[in-house]
Image (tube, rainbow, N blue to C red; front, side, top):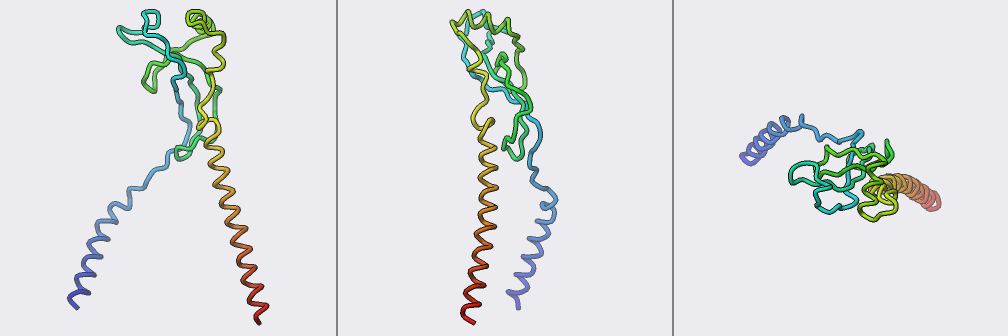
Length: 157
């Protein structure tokens, strides 16, 4: 009887603590996210200095729609910007700036750098597709198992 009382008290105490924590739900992030990734490292020269002792590189800026950190589609095309190093700020570069940077760095075409990373371009779509195939396959396979069980029960009867 004493063990039952201690077990019951333990359960009540445990439930008392867990009800307070149960209200704090895990939030799944979703929505549009602007991302900036570094794609080309410029030399640390005074030409590329935007502040005292701070230099910029070339980055690609794009916006994706994500659910639970899985990118589903891109909202905007990728554009080349001046990558500063922190996520929110960048230097806007127009076509003239990019042409001048291409001449200074002996590059013919910046378009090959204006590409999205694989995960943001295709990874999320492939992952969601595999999850859907897994769910559909499980449904079909589970349905076939039930039909096989019913056939074997009818054959035994």
